[in-house]
Every structure is written in C-alpha cells, then in structure tokens.
Image 1 (cartoon, one colour):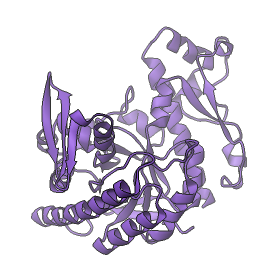
Image 2 (image 1 turned 90 degrees about the vertical axis):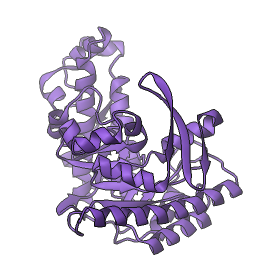
Image 3 (image 1 turned 180 degrees about the horizontal axis):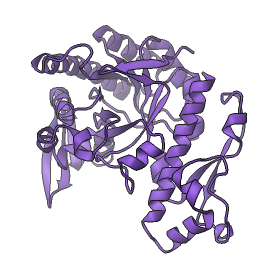
Length: 369
C-alpha cells in the first residue's frame, strides 16, 4: 500500500510514519518537554474538547498557543474532540445533544457545571487559538454496532460539517495573511462505521471538498475487540495516496505496524502513557537491529508487568534493547519499588520508557517501509 514518506507542515518536513502521544490537556502526565525530546518524541496531540474548559481558548490565544503554554517546540495536532463529546453524550443523553449545527454539552469545570456549544466554525476557531500544526474537522462518531440509519446520518453530518470547517479554515487563514507554506494543515475524518459503502461515500465527498490529509474515524474494532484491518484497508483504498492518512487512536505496537503496512502514516494513542502509569511496560523481545522486516516479524515485543513479585530483586533494566533514561540508569527492581511506595518518579520513568519504545518502533518502520 502506498504511503507518503514525508509531509511538509509550516515549512518543515515531517518524516512518516510518526507517533503522537496524547497530551490531551496540554501535558503528558508526570514528564516534561525535555523528557519527551530525550525519548525521541516528535509531536503531541491535544484535545480541543478538554482545552475548551481549562485553561480555555482565550488563555491559549493570549499566551501564543499551546506550544508556548507548555514549553514544547515539536509538532502539535489538535483533535476536534468529537470522539470524546459524542461518546459521553451517547452514554448519557443528559450531558448534551447533537444537531445539524453541532454539539451542545455540559462540563464540570472550575467549580461548576457550564454549558458549551461547538459548531464546525467554532471548532476551527478554537483550534486557531490553540495554534496547532494540524487541525481536525469536527466529525460525527457513531457507537459500536450502529444501525444503518445512524451510520448514514453520521456520514451526512460529517460531510456537511467538513464543508463548513473548510470554509471557516480558509477564512481564518486569509484573515491572518498566512501563506501555503505558513498555514496549518486541515484533515477531514472518514466516518461510516462498519459499512464499506458509507466509508467510501464519506471519503469521496471529503476528497471533493479537499483536505491536506484524511483521518480514520469512529470505532474500527471487530467483535473480538481487535483492529478491523479489513475496513482499515478499505479506507486506505478509497482515500488519496498522495495525502497522509492519519490513524486516529491507533494503537498498540502491532496495530501501528499493521496500519503502516496498509498505508497509514500518522498515529496517536493514550496506550503507552496510560499503560505506563498502570505498571504495564513495553519490551522488545528481539534486538531491533536484528529485525530485517518488522511487517513479517512475529513475537517481537511483549508486555512486562512491573508490579509482579518476581521483579523485586531483578537488577536488569526494563529492556536490554532500550536506550531510554530509565533503562540506562535504573533496574526493574528499583522501578518496582517506586510503584510499591507510590512515588511519582515511577510514573515518570515508566512513561519515558514506553514512549521511547514507540519512537524506536517509528525509526524501525521508517527503515523497513
């Protein structure tokens, strides 16, 4: 499957594939920007939905955007927050509502319950205040096993909202006198759930509108909870090969490898950082330098559950094939001790390690593709 190897954003070249850890609220918990750089992380994704309430777009605009706010000079993607908003509303209707004009929802923040409204236009306006490098259109996410009429509605609204996002985006670019080289990029999101015809219809209509890249929208797992590679491959086939494909929310290491093989080049996921805080670490089972073809290699990584008793006296690093700060300086036994006494250094070291594992994987994938 064809995949772009480079993508120019604001005059700088982004090498693909690339993984963006989730700095949802403008932070990767327990680590700072220097830790991220040392782990080989090139970019982060922040969430429009969460930043809307705290600190708020006016604060971010005043401070020059989220990069200045958090002291980060790498790439930033701003997600529209649609997945989070719709997931919450679908679980609890009292939290908000969805109409053709956008989303109304309620958030508990700053000591109270506040009502927010996000239209496609406001979604783009907020992302300009965030001042991200890549912006994501507001899209309509359907729940797992959605019915045909729900899927059609989600695609209809996703297309309509994408048109409005594009108009507002171009208006903001013009107002700021940005050029093709200095403007951010705008991605459309392909919805359609498990329906191949609806996925294709969505992709075709988004391409007519014209975007800089295309995202993998909605729930893309099968009944067994595994990535539905069939539908993911289908979306690859119906989106332009000369534009980057973004696997929103993908995924675990093997899922990333499988999706790169199918033509996807940008990824983000909460897994490596969340797993780190929950004592699940990623370990290379083979020396990455000895893996000739990562796409066909079997059993190349595993999970290490650091809280297990057998690691109490283990003087080995987390992974013998990792060069991260944690592996170069500390043992499994020490990290197990930190988690046992609930010291926050445990979170930092584990998070640094898992993120370095992902950046090493991206380096290996660049070599192999």
